[in-house]
Length: 143
Image 1 (cartoon, rainbow, N blue to C red):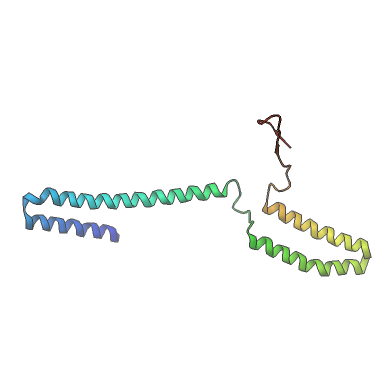
Image 2 (cartoon, one colour; image 1 turned 45 degrees about the vertical axis):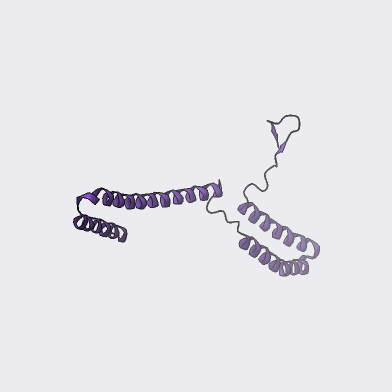
């Protein structure tokens, strides 16, 4: 039995005690008052459930088709960009020192490749063809 049930039981006991003290002529009013309190309690519980369900539905709609593993938060993207730039400096220096221009190009191709893979992972539809609406046919989509 939780606190709400205990409170409701106290209300019922108080209503019964008031009926004993006031007599039969107030029985109807006391019962109506108690039932109104029960209705308010039920309405509050239903409202809380509906708000919770609505919030859950909004969360599902906000997530859309994204998988829960997809992480595209600003902090992760920003951190990955900073780490990429910090590592680009020594990698460029090592590549240029060992193999001159071809070494520099290989190191930057690797850096760009890692960033492209990260971008594709966090934004699954990023590199797919963009769809434009044809002016001739409103129902037809083109790649």
